[in-house]
Length: 167
Image (cartoon, rainbow, N blue to C red; front, side, top):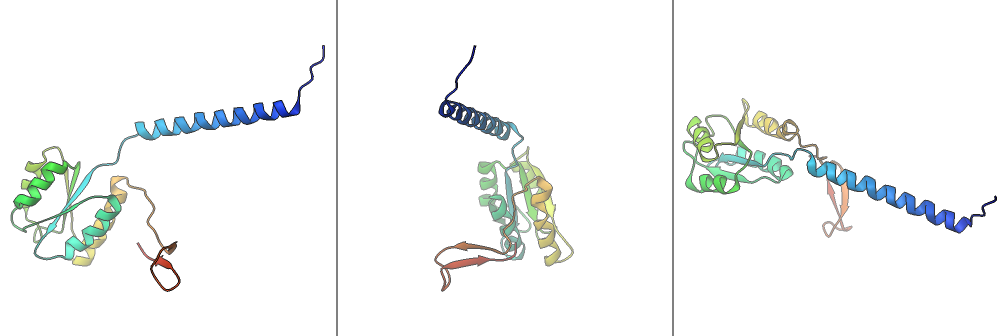
């Protein structure tokens, strides 16, 4: 018994199998991404009357898609407390040492969101506090790449490009 196969039919069958396999892999990857542990929801607290730590926190917060709430150095302000309660972060980061945000602010933030992990990021100087804050994303498991030396098209600059350099 001999079988004759039309090459066009065979090609269509192979293409259909490749497409089906690709869909199966894509669905598996999507299910894996949904079922993996989510990254924590982060919020930052910084001193309102001295913007240095807030500026350092803002860059990291932008990378994480997190808000920065400003408060008083010695007591958690009502606006910041209410924002924390409404946002319900998994992690609250205090930007700066106890001179920037007191232990009272720490305990009041902890009371506002009882299940949240509180992390204080501080250094011996403003620069070292900024460095400590910049290390936070990796510590929390965020692995999104940071742009460095990339050029993207836009309407900025004479030649229509915006060059982004640094972190």
